[in-house]
Length: 284
Image 1 (cartoon, helix red, strand yellow):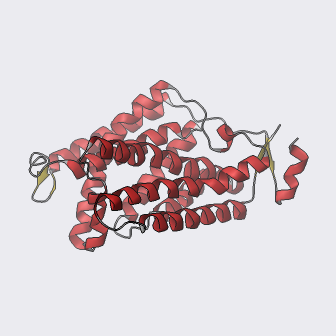
Image 2: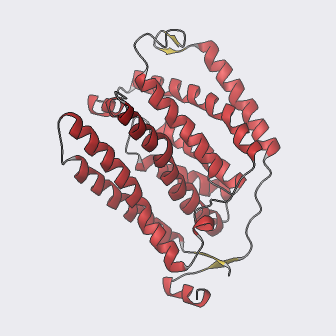
Image 3: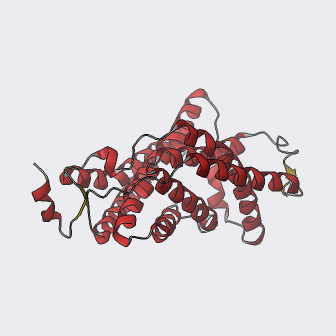
């Protein structure tokens, strides 16, 4: 059976509906408790349920089309070489983006409420470690890659017939959904690279690994004791030597990744539908 590609308007509607549905539910759950450990538990639960519900409308649409989840969300297997090659890319990217965060905060300090994210990611027990790592490093990135690079960008690639625009639009949507004006540029840049990787591999698994690396270091930095980064920092910024090294590692890592990762073949067994009812001819 051919793979069915819906209209761009349909994809945008499902994305917006899913985001609003998920965020609203997350806020409602988080508001159930406001103090102590119960507040933290409610926040984690709200974020997890919210991320799941963001994906739910798209998953239901996939089922209605009769499409394979593996294809619909771009979850095909990738080579081990590609996964290994992305590791130095992730390491270099983390350092450069950290310095960009510091520069933004220097000129446009975020209000205190936006700095509470560090408290949300604070690990104070084995249970909180499992919850934070499970959500921030694994499940959150997985759901977001499925939604933005697996579903949305893939439809844009076929509908616009322009990979660059598809990756840029997907990255912009990804940045806006995070609702952080002080991090929108950094998130957008990361989204562009994630989009490129997903397109090149034809899969979300490598972009997921890169996404998880970025989030994993965010959790690590949020839990280091005071003074632990004295070797890393220089007058409130990342040490210049480390920035240069990070750029070099990122560049060499990207060259390695490109060398071992041929561009995924475009699926030509595609049917474009203009109306949800048109899909009935292709499903049994």
